[in-house]
Each structure stands twice: as structure tokens, then as C-alpha cells.
Length: 431
Image (cartoon, rainbow, N blue to C red; front, side, top):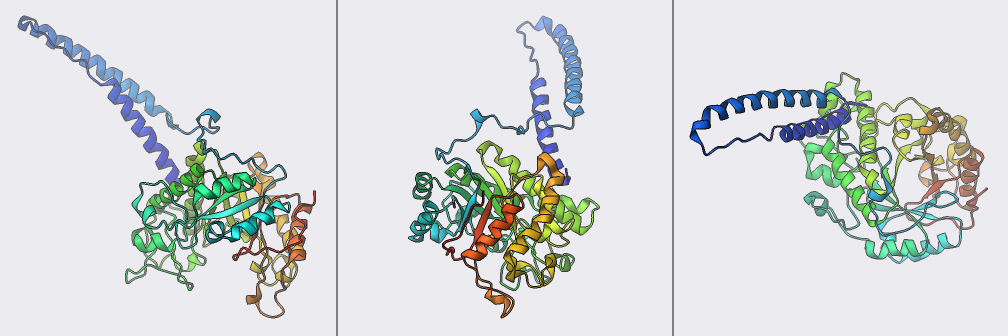
């Protein structure tokens, strides 16, 4: 367990110990109306103070003896204490087979078309934006956080959406973009990365990130997640759980706080990995009372190396702290020659099959701690790769990726199309 989580648990222990001390030292008050008994009262108080002091020291010593907090969320949260959203949608018997849905689709007329797609195929789940790539919270939340409320732009009415999903038995997954958050970054530069002139850093696409070292950022996103769980979402999927791409080239140039991690003595790369991993562990612990799975999107290439140097993702360590791992293995996202394939976008089956050799090795090593594998697959055409480097993706290409997963022992998947227009006629199950 790394530094930030240790501090969190130590503070819980400390506050619990203090409460106990105050309870023990509430003080025995002696009063008498007989002035002649004053010496006896003083003597009695001295004896009581000595006994009380010994008792308090003994109790405090006992409380501080253990490294484990007296109050903690249990590993298995009792069912009778779990939050009941009132939305009853069971985990799909054949595993999650889902599609990505933007808030505008979920809150607009396109939802009818997407619902028909699921009702007439073996697809059964939707990953729906709750906090999007800009940092906008697109579903109204019951939050006291002023910043959350400031950046809430309600596109989806949960009172309409959740009963609709329940009626059609569509498994609901809430997508929450975490550290890519231009709204919060520009509102709170102290929670972001700034340039020499004090301006908030942004990448070439004009996107800004918030700082994974900062626990206030963790709490902000987890509060959004908790409110989504209370609405009835059954899975909280955290996306962009990482530093900006290429951060290893600017980590000594930008201005930002490393919080407690700066005192760890670890390398910059390891500090980033620790912060990202600790966030995931913290989020999962905080969400235990809400009866949801926790899933994380992660770059596929993270499974092919021990840890990514810039973005702070360690596939194995993140996997240990989630219920579901969703690697993004779109063929278009692999460089020429990777996975032993000259032009990956041209070979969707081979990309997925070859990649799963790496992922299966990592997850097999985790044994019983391994999460469900539910990769993101490509259902879009990557024409930006240029002539000769891409093919048009349709039902056959989607089916090839799913078949490769199945042959590698994985029967869950998610399809990505930013416009939510999915290929028709694909076979989604090979059981």
C-alpha cells in the first residue's frame, strides 16, 4: 500500500483513537455541599485523576498498538447495509456485451434506435456518459459540491433513463472520465498542471488534465461516481485514469504538486504509477456500500510492459484493484509492426488474438485476484491513418475481433463508436 492510502487509514485510526480518549477522559466530577469535606474531595480527585491517567494511557497505548484502523469498510460489505437504488437489472447471464452511448444519444431520439439494436441482438449493455471528456457532468446529481454543480449540464433525465433501461433489461454502466477534465483544471489551476507563466497546460487538442497526485481530485470524481451508483447504474467505469500522454517529457517542466508522493523517494515513473493505482483502490473502497462493480479503461499496450513510463498505468496493479478491466485494443491504435503485425488496422482478428496472449499471462498470474476482462473493440473506420493503412470496418471486422476474444477465453466486450452508429449484422456470441 503506498503513501496516500497509508495516510488516509492512519488519519482514520488517529481520529478513532482520539474519540476513545475523549470517551475515557470525560472526567469524573465531584461536588459537595459540605465545605468541611473539601480536603477529602481534593484527595479523592487526586486518586481519581491518577487512576484516570493510567487508564487513559493504557487505553491509548492499546489503541495505537495496531496498524489497522478500528473503523473500516469491510472487504465484503453486508447485503443488508448496501444502498438500494430501486433499479433492478441483473448482471447479464452470458456476460456483458455492450456499446458506448453519449449523453446526447441517451437523452435524445437516438436512444430508441440503440435500444432496438440491443433488443434484437445479443448485445445487452450500455456504457453511458455521466462525466464526459470535457469534465461536464451530463446527468443531474444530488451533490453539495459547488464545483460539481457548476459543471453540471443535464442532458439526460435519470428519471426517464433508468426506468427505460430497467424495462428493456439493459445493463447500465456509468462512464466517468477522471483525470482529463478541462473544466476542473481551468477552474482550479492548483489541481492541474501549469506552465511557467501560470497558465493551465493543455495538449495539442486543447485538452487539460487534473493532477492524479491530489486527493481532492479523487474525492471529486468519487462523489460523482457515488451519485451515479445511487441512480441505479450497476457498474462504474472510470476512463482516463492516467496522466497525459508523453508526460515523462514534461514532468520536470510543468508546475504542480506531488503531495505526499514527492516524499516517497521513488522515481517519477513509480510515483505516477502509485498515484494512479491508489486512486483506483480508494474509489473501489468508497463505492463498496453502493453494490456496484468498479471497472477501469486502460491502454492495451500497458499489458505488454511492466509499467508505462509517462501515463502511470501498471496493468497488473490496476487489475488487482478492480472488478473489471477494459483494455482498449482497437486495431487502429497500434503502431506499424506492433504485436508482430505490419499494419494492425488491416488485421482485426490477429491484433486482438495476439494482444490477448499478453493480457492472459498478466491476469493468470493474479490468480483469484484477477478481474473480469472486458476489452473495448473497434467499430469505426480509422481513415485518418491514410490510404493503405486502414480498412473500412463493418460487421465482418467487428465479428473477427469478437471471435478472437472468444478463442482466447474471453466472452465479454464493449464496442466503441464515437457517433454511436454500430455495424449491423455482426455475430456477437460464439458460445
